[in-house]
Length: 209
Image 1 (cartoon, rainbow, N blue to C red):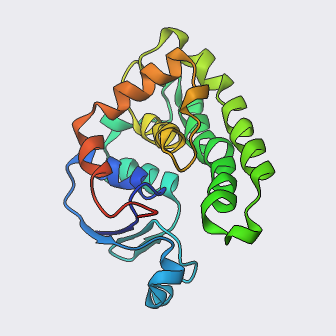
Image 2 (spheres, rainbow, N blue to C red; image 1 turned 135 degrees about the horizontal axis):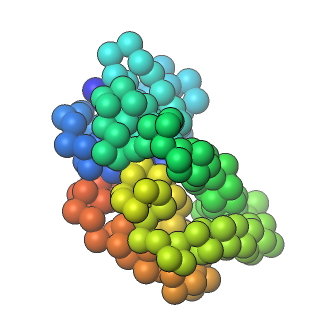
């Protein structure tokens, strides 16, 4: 089992899940973005993105899907929910919400604040999509009003997937934490206090030096 990773990128999701599960893995740390700074990586993953996950004949590129795969393939439902669970639909919704709704606007911020050359950086896009991200936290804010974790009263990969988006938003890369509600900030604090998160977050070189 091997995971190609850049610190603070979406590959943190499966790396954190692997650390929570205690499954042995090999980690390949890459400079960001690897398609520019490690061009031979395109021979492994034609997208040139991270994560890239290898498990036997299985090859995967989507961070949330890898977390879901690990739960199902290795029957680690201590970190997931079975289909007959009454909160299974909510669990799946949080998994997909984490990337489609929350991480997406952050990628616009990262692109137009950090990745584009100075003459192509767009302050308006950064401002607007930072606000878009914060506005989409309303669902989470309401959901955790009386909950410690997202589903079934316990920590699951749904918390990993949502937690990564909050963590990225709290970094100077996105710089949105001042817009988090007290409940969201407390939830992120619980996530970041987990030893498996701390181990995973410390691995690799920072995205932008």
